Amino acid sequence: MQNRPVCFFHVWKAWRTRLLSFALLAFVPSICIAQEPSPTPSPSEMEAEPVVVTATRFDIPLDLSPASASVITSEDLEQKQIERVSDALREVPGLSVVQTGTAGQLTSVFTRGLRSEHTQVLLDGIPINQGLQGAFNFADLTTDDIDRIEVVRGPQSTLYGPRALAGVIQIFTKQGTGTPGATVAAEGGSYDSFREWGQSDGKIGDFDYSVGASRLDTDNARPNNNYRNTAAITDVGWSPDEQLRIGSLFTYSVSDTGNPNSIFDPRPIDHFLTERWLIGPHIDWKPADWWDHKLIVSYDHERQINDPNEDGFVGPTRALFERTQVDYQNDLRPTSWLTLTSGFFYSRVNAGQERPFVLQIFGPQPTFVSDHTEEIAGFLQATLTPIENLIFVAGGRFDHFNQFGGVWTYRVAGSYKIARTNTILHSSAATGFSPPSSQDKIFGNNFGLKPEHDFGCDVGVRQELWENRVAVGLTQPIANLLFTASYTYLEAEKTDDTDISQPKGSRLPRRPRNVVYVSASYLWWKRLRTTVEANFVNAREEINFGGPNFDIEDYSFVNIAAEYEVNPHLSIFGRIENLANEQYAEVFGFRALGRAAYGGVKVRF
Image (cartoon, rainbow, N blue to C red):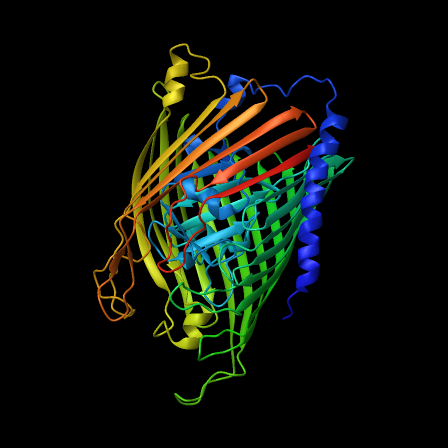
């Protein structure tokens, strides 16, 4: 792995600063054409219930979801100027987002307190959990070309198999419709940060497309803390008629991260390079109104270089992770009140790591470790809607693995909406599982090579407060105001003896007991959008190897953002993160950034 020449990097940063300033000066006078401002969404548009797919594997309104679910839209991402998926997930109840320091460092998401590898992450229906651990590192996942993010909590293995023990996070890309359009933007700010990105989507004849790309360079706050990330994603499709779409998803990202380690043990030259790409051809075919087919064939490839890896034992490593997957789904509706969803899934994973300089002082250590996993599964689910506003779901699944045999899972769930009060009741009972990861099998962290099993049940109530106010005659409670608030209380403790890092009965580390999230966004004069969001995290513990856990500090932060629409083609935006300059660490010893300010320009055409 080679770093780029320092002289070139500083020249490029200087030129980007000048280009950003020039863009602000050049575009403002040239694009300020007299046009009507963008219309404010109508009350009916603002009150439209989002659609959720992940809870049942086909479209249903969010307010009828038989599982505890949340949806984050592209509008949410844009209004809050969110650049990474992990930051968007901070507002979702039941999720704990933990970042090891600054942008680019390991970023984990815990669903309802379970480990990060117990949450299945999907991109347009394709499982993308990574590497030897089987978890997903959200550090490099940007919001480029994202249409929405769906989060479903509770065991979902009946629908999604391995890694869905705690829940599912599914990211959906945009699909081009209408006249092609594009947006390009650039920003700069604190810690020598520069980011450029672009997005375009549309439909030309029978062909549709969407594409997004971005580049981020930042030095962050400490020596050897720099982060460079390039990402691109596109979805293209061909629809000869309304019943058929043949398309493919393509993604690519490369990131180069300086790893300064903790503030107590700094490493001045450690670097980590990660390169990923994915291709996912898919076919959506609807031969009749009562019959749907969906087929996805995907291949993804991940390469990691950790050099020099100053851990004092393993030394420099190079890892390769490749996976081929096939997912077929068949939705059959024999009557108006019954949908039968069935399908099969196949996965082949090869994972390997070279570590040629591993120390041999503790006995012979392998210089190359690898694992091969194959899985084949079949599932069936029945969704009943016998009366209006009532959904009942029941299903089962069987997964077979080449190394430890078969696993059965089941799920029953239901929801009912009381129309008069807009009250939604939902409940579920399900089993889930998480198989041993390649890391577990290679290094012996899972004795007997048996999957982890789980039974989960929940009962929930959702009350649409604004809808109640609309029912008594207010067309919009407060025009142009969007308000979000969530609170999560979590009790999560260690219940087994196999992991000796902490005593049985200890609170799970880095899972806060209380999390409060609040945001408010207001559109002024139909041109200026301002957003304020605040996060408060309380009662966390950290592992003290060989002894009881110890408490780590509570923290809170406030972010503000603003975007002014000069005209329909040009916007100027800015934000301040960690407004109060809170000094905190989500992981003990790995400080987050202090106050930071960013600003830029966005052009649409």
